[in-house]
Image 1 (spheres, rainbow, N blue to C red):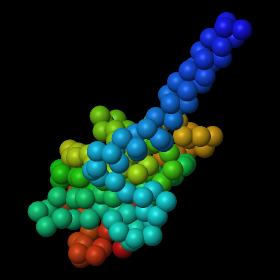
Image 2: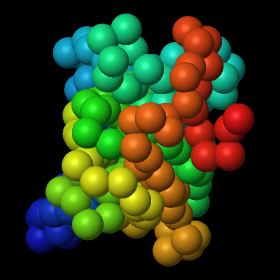
Image 3: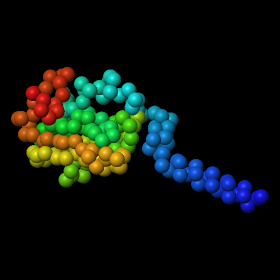
Length: 174
């Protein structure tokens, strides 16, 4: 009888450890951030208004000449799927996730940013040559993960659109 109780207790402990280990980004990390305060966002409503509303996504020229790039990661897609930034200009990437953990990377660079539901992740980078870069997801997020990628177009500063305060640049924007 006592051996069964010990086996049962060990089984429950192993089950609890497995659940905690597999749910760290979805449960533990958001709870820890909530208790610590910080850069939080409601992933269920982030599209509806505020910083990550659709009209605020893409590249925006800041008053100091740098660029702020806002994106959302969601299963099998980055929004917007194609963005434009000027060469040799500091870019402040702000990204969040609507559903699961994703990692946005810029191909052939050392830029990688983890997008976690409920958190805004920040990264700063500057690209020193023009060209087109793939932005694949490097965190397995489900069956369609293999196709999850966006596109980054780095243009000469003279070709980067002149933007008004409420305008954003994405590929194909006029």
